[in-house]
Image 1: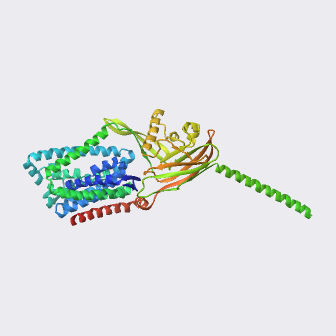
Image 2: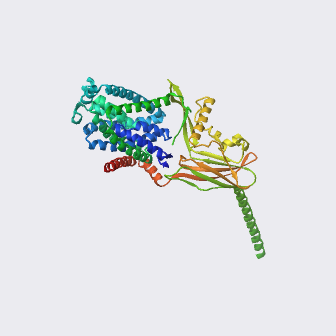
Image 3: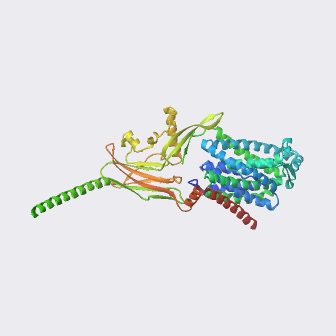
Length: 305
Length: 260
């Protein structure tokens, strides 16, 4: 069914967009990632302008992360204090991110920056997760040690001020570390239209040393507020949030996320992380190819309104 | 005395009649000229609704004589920037660019000749915006050599054709009889909003002898139009509403799934 998008000012096939967002929603429920790193490139591929894809995607992630985190909240798998400290950093990050987005869009380099950021982040985190989850798969004792203390944190991180106690995560660390992670997540929400879950989840495990049980719920909890801020900023600064497209994405994503939350109970940690790592590396490879293979048409046209 | 007055009155009346006759003749001539080429649109408003998937714009018209008919559909004029990717350390990156001024956001045209070249001499075609060549003169600067500039010009047209904003080739003017003709323009679903102009030209012996035009509006209506205007006029409210809708949708779905 063709449906007209009032902000994108074009018609799209509603079913295709629905199916993709449902698939991404399943991943979001299982892994605690927003899944925007898959949806945004897909939306651009279907011919939706990158700016609209990014702004609308931020709006969709508000819904999918809220739906996902409610399940985790009910089971007590959210460190709310940690989440709120990250939100504080996330607000600042998303506001700064909007201005960077606007500047890059003006310069005609936003697509390039989006690709480079994806390749760098997805590539390094995919590889890191791949290595870690395969070694922990063969050596379960090491895995246990990593899961329950913060010995992996560097001396520099330990020496930062504003130390705070996070009883739920059994951590005593500087508030600047989770706020910094939230800041980066806010930047990504504004520039890439993603929750940044693919970056948050590993960062919370490897940098904060949070118990993996709490990571997915806390990441989703934090992403609700960061992407809500990014959505409002995009709507005000760029007028690129298409609520009709957003509702299709939300509908698909929300259904998928609920299925994902159910799946998450039956899936073992290492398997899930290996699968996620493979998926991240696949998206990264595709983006690399797009960037380094000579495009069909070297020229592109932008109409100024 | 009265006879003189009567003669004067007669002369005045004759003068008046002559004036009226001349005036009527004049306006008759003007009307005849206008009637040499006439067009009307099947609809002067294209309404974009939520179910909009494109539209058909039919232009009907009559001509006198045997001249050729050209119909041009032009959208609002806006600036366009064309960028060219170059290979930088293996990656393809936007480097050089060129700005074109006042390019119609949408353009389509039709004529009754087999070959566009036979219609009018090139200068006349450029002047009347017939064909793509006419946009090529709208460069803002001459920063590059003519070959590079031409590459950019061709890219502009190619990119717009790919997005269905320019036609691949001209449409046909279909004659229902010697005088009555019709043109069908197919507008795609991404047709830009704004005020359009449909111009009709009658071409005889390589000259434009008559011209007329009609206005047409492409606008969103109903729900689409409300969303668009709120998003652009009350953008903060719109942003907050989007977040609110997203939160309600996320929460509702969670409640729904829990009940099941």
